Length: 502
Image 1 (cartoon, rainbow, N blue to C red):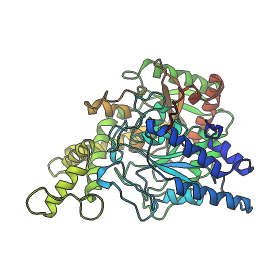
Image 2 (tube, one colour):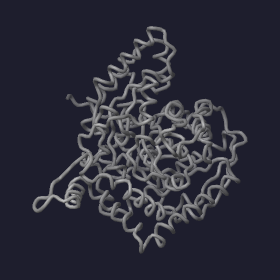
Image 3 (tube, rainbow, N blue to C red):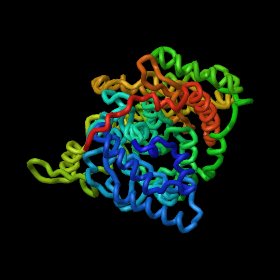
Image 4 (cartoon, one colour):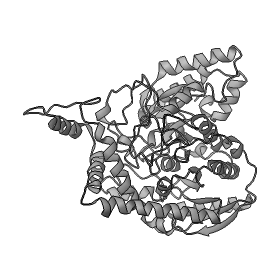
């Protein structure tokens, strides 16, 4: 295996800046790795070999010419296939968008290109980001590099698996109820959900517009901070975009200690349902925070007990509205009725029946039901009231602590098919991550160790809205302490993927 793919993005950036290696070499090394292992991992839906190499060569030429380049210029990246990319197929892992090539770039893709970062390809996900395991992709499962018989989390399992399998040093994910943080937890990677509105949503194929947020998937906290500063910041094309500059994250990730920081353990995000190995790893990490100078307190957020139920009313309602545009009339798949006249209603029904998977149909039906005249107040209206209570709980908790912490997910990666017949059991994987999306606050997941089954566990840190830098301060200090404890990165303990001749 090329040693280049083992390097962090920050290390690659330093090598590139010093002209010790070229972007073409770095990009080629990752494309070779993709060719060797992605047949087993299936992290990517589409590869972008020619354009990635051309972008890398262009960056190399600019560097040779003496241009002052952005820090991550020449470092390749993978992008979740729910983010539109001009000239590249974007499907949201759905048959209804099979072969669709967008005519424009999402704002964050525009920023990646401006930063000189070659795009390796588009990663797999649960269809329209609806799922917690990447088992609901129309194009097949992504597999966890730690154990190919287990899920890589969802919906962004492709991005997390690509980074964990050393197919990409960096990736973009999206997080609606935990779809960056939960995959990061079960693959031993770092995932960040920024403050809602701090990274532009223009060009994301929307599932739930008040919840969706794009963010970094990386192998180190510093890498996440570097990528966050590239993609963040105000965008006039996004009506929900915040005007705050995306700065200070890299500095925070390099903090030396946590003196004076108050860390709150959320009483409701632990206990029953959390595997013993997950709890043990979490407690050991909290002890390390104390050693770094943090003061640890317990906080209570009683409304969190209703967060899962509220989320699974609000999210399907918004999804049913957002997915109404996939009607077989304007773009994407069009299926004519098998018999009878091809009326608009019959074409729409045939197209959606053939184009949407079971989980998408389930959520559209639920969302349409809770928005209907007879049930709006009882379900959707009540869920929005719970959302307000959750926001108030967070506000109160942050008067007692600067950051809040919990396990990212209650268990480690489960085996394929284990929860497919029980949607509620699947939904419970997001119990610790959902509150942050309902409140619009930022969160990070970083690996905290291995559970009793030898699989990675995630440690979640939450901060008040617009205080994303606190995540990087806590995450950076904890990561260094854990790395010293393990004698190296946790991913170094993952079984090596067998590289088949392809």
